[in-house]
Length: 97
Length: 97
Image (cartoon, rainbow over all chains, first blue to last red):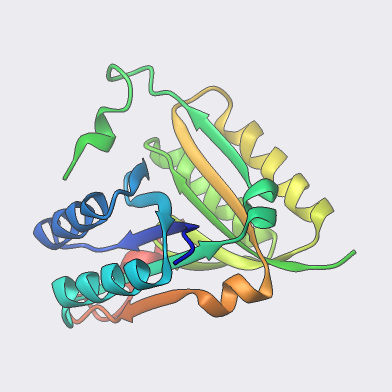
């Protein structure tokens, strides 16, 4: 099944749940691009499986999750700033989870 | 010029800069959907203007910003969880900025 690029962003207050969601994203081969944002390529089955897993982790606890498939055209249209952190040795804040 | 849906997510450590970026997003009519995530519709000129404004605010300070245009097909393919916060009266954590 065709893999397409996805972005996944979440806003989860509970530290333990947030770390478990991050682990799930990594388990599916996604790469961390922000503190609470991941990027990668997944086919439809894997997208649905990951989303279901995250839904299970979160349960009815407070949180927001967005999983967004992105076509090639939209990927080309994205704009990004990636400024390294000068104050802590570079990107350590992304090491959580 | 045609407006299309966009998502904008950022990861900015400095509280003041982060709040200024949030204000810029609101000034361009975007709606807050996560603590550091906005959604709305902007044409190409407005997207570039907002992105330039955010670049100016951030300067060379540490931070990551992603502005993603999203076509109708991808919008339809998105998956979301929007669990209300039961612990603080509902969504107060989104009131920052």
